[in-house]
Structures are given as structure tokens and as C-alpha cells.
Length: 506
Image (cartoon, rainbow, N blue to C red; front, side, top):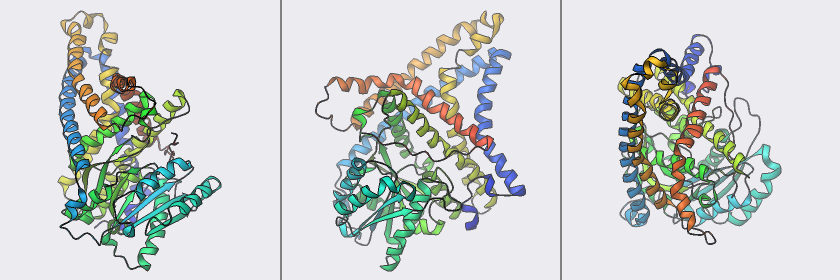
């Protein structure tokens, strides 16, 4: 089992000598692959236009096949999601022993308004899970006490008696070895909750921890569904439990571009739930307190603590860790600013923070290099999956929507006189038209996931929810590829990205 000292490496700066140099190489690899691909296509479009034209046609065909393949997964998970929401999970638990399972919910709170906090706590209070086995921690930041204290006190007064325990914690600012962010806050909160568990002698194996964002609202049956999957998992304490994030809290009042980006994130999670071997934890998720205690809780020196905790556990348990897909939703906020320009900036920053998950690639390479116990096949699978994912996110949209016609622009008169140059735009247009199948699927599934239309909004709004998908060629480049390339370049240059808290406006 990997020594605990290696689990919480944040970056190459935490190492020295040969190991620092090795980690530094690992940090450069993602950008080298992505930026290298784009530079190579641009250069070869001039130097070898015929070769790149053939490559683009083959790549477009690959994109078409992949789009159809993932669309089928999306449709299947959409059906499963609706089926699971309609199930009576309490009835499914009736023949099981589940009265020992407790739920701990940690809600990191910074400067969000009372409306956001109140809605989240109200959803927890309306949960069908037994109140005497439900513990809630409102994890506040000391650096925001001027704003947060009044809201925390109001929350405690209104909801303090609703749960077995309602704990308000204050994470101190400027602790050594930490960066300001969610990971350091919820780790502090979990250690404070641990004191209560130890005092009441509650076994860690009986506690399920849900690390939520402050805007995460649960369905009344969420914890029943979670407990069922926990009790039926092959290795419950070596598994995390991932719901599907729906950004439905304010979806009807969000700009179209924000809706498309948010829903695209939902769709990616739904498709991954049909391929659980590729899943890692994301945003709001749940896990055993036993695992958290074993790995030393979330890292306090990284931005992407939500996915990093999965890799922490995978290394700690020598590759024997997995994510169990719940195919059950939690509802969160879509990104909304005070105007269109501010919304666009916020969406970009949020996407860049999410794509900063690329910092897990060097961590994983380093961990696999140090840990000789993990099977080689497991190492290759996870490394290939991560590299392909971040490479595809950052390059595929640009290759499809920006560079597909580049050989015609710079290939010269000799190439433009060939039959291949004549057919390149026609073949590309044909394949991209066929790939519209994915947009149609997206439009159908997205409308099925929408909450009821608020009173006061006309039926015409439904049309906007469908037509918004024509924005995909823009959003997938501007809010997908560009933030991904930005994050990878920062990692390669050794310019770490701080934790940016997404403003919550409704």
C-alpha cells in the first residue's frame, strides 16, 4: 500500500531533486499532447495539405461514430434516470438491514446569499431519510465571517432542530500548506464532525459522507437510493457514489449559452454513468467515512479536490477502488451573471477550474511510478483514459469546427487544384450533418430533464430550450477547448490556478 506521505502531493513544488524533475515532466505532458496536436495540424496543413486533408476526413468519421456511440449511452441513462426517480427506494430497503447507516452532509459555504443556503437546507429537511441519522455541517470560511456569520446563525436557528446534529464550522484562513478552497474547508469540517462521531462511538463504517456544493438540492429519496447502492455494492468502503448533476435550480432563468454548457456537463456525466469503469468523482458526490479517514480526508493543497479524492483512494488501496454510478440526480445552479458578458466570463472561469482537473494527470503518473503494487494493466487503463479525455476535450472541437478547412486556406494553388481539395469540404459537411444526430438526442433528453416551467413564463420558452443546441459549435470551442488549453498551458508553465468560487445568483 502506498505510503500516506505520497498521497497529498499537490504539485512539483512539494518535491525536491530527481522526484521534482520527474513530476515536472509529468506536468508538461498534457499540454505537449494538446498544443502539439494543434500546432502540428496548422503546420502540416501548409507543408502536407493532402495528408492533413485525409487525416481530417478520417477524424470527422471518428467523430461521427463517437457521437452516435455516446448518444446511445445518453439516451439509455436518461431512461434509467427517470426509472430510478420513480422507484420507491424505501420499499427496496425494506428487506435489508439499514438502521445502522448514518448520513453526514458537508456544505461548504462562502459568501452565498440566504436564499441559496435556505433552499439547500430545506431540501435536506424534506428528505425521507430518518432525521435521527442525519448530520449536517455548514462549513463556513473564517475569511468570509463578515458576511457569513449572520446567515450561519439564521440557518442554525431555523434548521438546528431538524437533524440529529447541525454543526457550524469555521475554517481558519492561512493555514500552512493549504490553498483557499473547497478541499481545505471540507477537510476542516469533516475533522470537526469526526469529534462528535468519536464521542458517540459511531463506527466509521456506518457513515456515508456527502460532499455537496452549497447550492446542491437533493430529491427526497436521494439518501435512500444512496444507502441502497452502498449496501449492495461489492466493496462498499472501496467505492464512491456519484449522482448525476442537473443544473435545474435556475435553469429557466439562465442565458442560453450558460444552459448549453451546464447541460453538456450533465450529459457527459450521464454518458460516463453508462461506462462506470471510466468514472471518477465530480462535484457533489458521496463516499464512506472509513475511506476518508484512511486516506487523510480531502487534499487541502489542490483545486480539484472532488476528483482528487478518488485518485487518493485508488493509490491508497493499490488500485482497488471504483465509482458506483447512482443514475439519480441532484440539482444545482447554472452559472448566471448580472449580464451576458459577466455570465460568459463566469462560465469560462468555471470551466477552466473544472478542466484544471488535468492536475490529476501528473499526480497519477507520479503515484503509479511510486506504487509498484498496482497492476500494470490498471495503470495503463487509467492513464490512457485521463490523457485521452483531456486531449479530446481541448483538441477535438478545434479540429472539427476551426481547422477542418485550414488545408484549403494555406495548402497553396497546387493542392487546391486537386480532387481531394474539391471534396474535402463536401465530405466534411456531410459527416457533420450526420453528426447532428447527437444534437437531436441532446435536445430530446434535455427537455425531459427540465423541471416544471415556472408560472409567468410563456410556452415560447420551450422553443428556446430546444433551439439552444444550435450553439454547440460555439460553446464547445469557447467554453470547452479554450479553457482546457488554458489550464494545460498553465500547468506546463508552472503557473497554478487558484480556487475560484462560482457566484450564485437566482
